[in-house]
Amino acid sequence: MTSEPTDHTHSSNYTYFTYFTYFTHHTQSQPLETHTLLIQKERSTPTKPNSRSDSGFTLIEVLVALSIVAITLLAGVQSMGSMTLNAQRQWDVFLAEQCANNALNTLKLSAQLPPVGEQSVECLQANTPFKVQISINTTPNPTFRRVDAQVFKEGLPQLKLTTVIGRI
View 1 (spheres, rainbow, N blue to C red):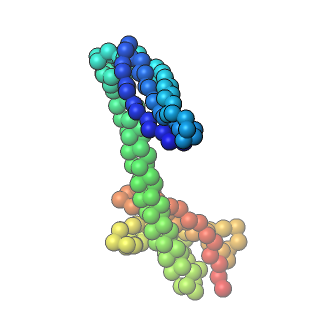
View 2 (cartoon, helix red, strand yellow):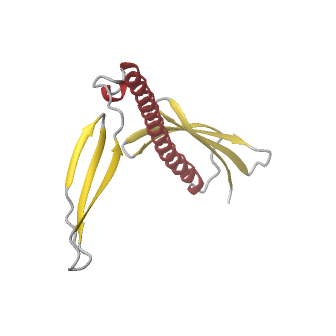
């Protein structure tokens, strides 16, 4: 069996007709037979060159999309700014805690019961100046003192620690 396809394509009203002609040879004593098949394929209706599907997005659609993107970016920028301020605040509180602990440890290591009153100590941590305001008060037990250490940075309170110091 041998076949030799031939293809002839004609178009009419956007319908394609394809003719295939092939030859078969059953035996040597029989002549060649010719067979023709007709295959019909429908093509979609053509679109107009300036139809909506070919023209892209409208101005309103583009403006709405840009508005959504702008609002999203604005929310992201505000979030990043808030995160940066929070990180700075945590860093300042950490440094203020170091200053307060240093001041309280100095009083604890003095081996004397600190006198009642107010003290002010300057503290420099990570090249940042802090001011520690120490307030020493009496307690119902005369062998103990209540000590409050409040730390300020540029006049703003950062942290307040309270402890009790006793006579050893």
